[in-house]
Amino acid sequence: SLALTAGQTISVYVGGKGGNAGGVMGWNGGGQGGLDVGANQHGGSGGGATDIRVGGTALANRVIVAGGGAGGGLGSSTNSGMGGSHGGRGFAGRNGSSSLKPYYGSSLSPVTAGSGGGGSRNVMGGNGGGVVRIELSGAMTIIGQIVANGAGGVQSNDARYSSGGGAGGSIWVTADGMNGGGRFYANGGTSPGSDGGGGAGGRIVVEYNSAS
Image (cartoon, rainbow, N blue to C red; front, top):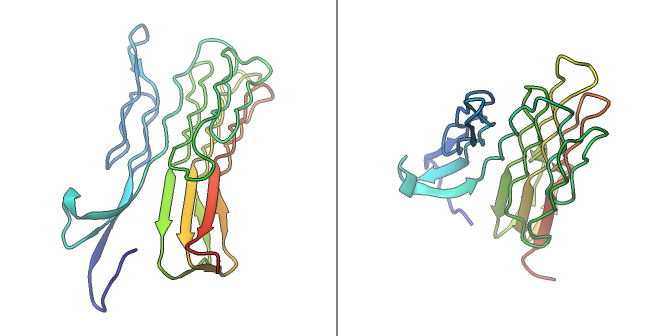
């Protein structure tokens, strides 16, 4: 829980999107994509974390952190990319060049980001969804949306092929109750081509502090 007083200042740092070609890291902690030595190019890098800081702006003042999503796979010279896995397995696509990755993460306490989609014909796969963790001592009112979706794949210069979509991330909320008409989303990203693989859905858990 986060207790605040009237007039108190908090700082919200929004993580940056991970880069594609060149492996530019997402601002605020995104990891760099792996290097393909032969192509001398990095895979897609992860997105940076979003956090809330109280009492200062240093890393030590962080009280809530939402992790960034995984980067997309480096473009392949052949075939379409498979979708990223997380809460389930991503779709390999009709011409998927790699075997499907297994699903992973906890169905009760989800804190894992979604996997990035596979690349295709020199285009990057979609980034995976990030992680949102909210703990409240009172009821939560949702008016808008809380989203940890995977990004969509990219169409290559050949209409038959496209990269895979990223898998959805994780949303885990603990509160005394839930009000409002808002929604939670952790959808997998789509693939625009006819042969590319869509990303798997992520994991969403909403739990109450007590059964009463």
